[in-house]
Length: 154
Image 1 (cartoon, rainbow, N blue to C red):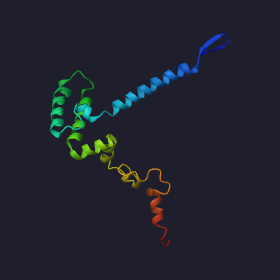
Image 2: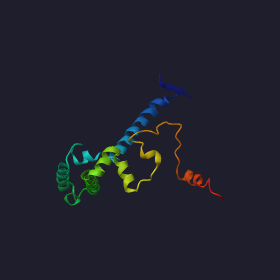
Image 3: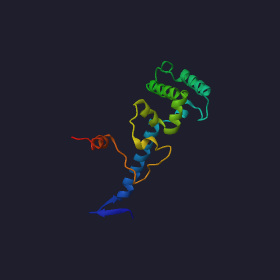
């Protein structure tokens, strides 16, 4: 059944062609996202409860084998070493590690960029007080300036 006959030619049903291709695309995209943001603990091969000393030991062990000078034929050795080094730099610092544990890589990116302050984002992850509250109006910088000039004589 799943075939249609048009002028004597059998064509496969659209669902049989499109669905497998969409599933393949979804799997490939998921793999790309996962590869882009690997877990720092997995990169260093330590568990989340590892001490700073265990993290340092794991990094040194990996650095000896993954350093680009030790892998001259591997074109990706430099990038891999940078990823491991980044993981170590974050996990060895107590404050950065807490941010990473709480927000992931996104929290670290916002810190490096200075992170834009937004009132709704300040308490969002700790208390969730602005979630789905229709009574709360959050102002951005475009709304704030005109409101401060309402009472002035112009």
